[in-house]
Amino acid sequence: MTDFNPDDMIARFRERAEAVQRRGVPPVEGPERQRFIAQARLDYLDFAMLADAKPSLDDGILTLRIDLRASDN
Picture (cartoon, rainbow, N blue to C red):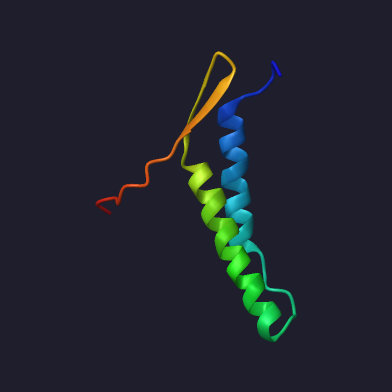
């Protein structure tokens, strides 16, 4: 895997997080709607955390550092 670029991977996760936010809710009702919304929230959280990661690739080992400490903002 010589063409792997961790920064490109992070950019793809950023795009996925944005896509989840833009995605509409399908015309479903009741419990199915609530499950869809809950899953979209989890998808966004996962993608957004990975999009904020600081990647490093050392000796073929990919490390993603994600700071989960509360920000001052």
